[in-house]
Length: 188
Image (tube, rainbow, N blue to C red):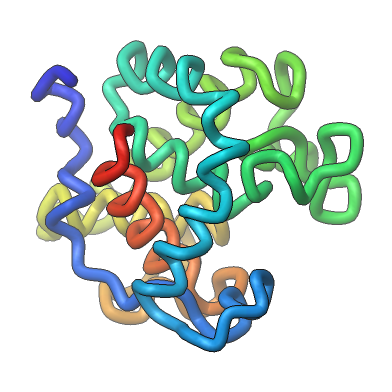
């Protein structure tokens, strides 16, 4: 994997508290935190295999860590398992990365490379916005902030330590980072 792919930060260096109890309940887990996030990523890994080539291609093209893309796919759609005809979030979210039709015009099939590319570009745009909003943060902190903004918008990210307040489950960035660390350690 080319080193310039870390231009947005290194997910392995990001601190994380992992999944909240509300998020861990999806898989009926009696654990929370990083172990719960890792278990949920592992639970999605069989389905994720179908998309691995597309994820790696988009990661290379967009210079985004494929593990982060896989983690967002795991969190947003459980690698497709949570979707109905490609849609989730009460018909507002489209595809593996749950591109919100209220803010974007979804492109491609729900599980296509084109869709993954669009979702990844939205993530990159969020990270870039966080870089501008918090120029004093490290690249790793800005990446985590961008992940939070992918869920709840740039305006929701006010401080580093409380960036997940207002995100789905109150743990979005922390859960995605922990899942990304699992995927990074497991071939992405």
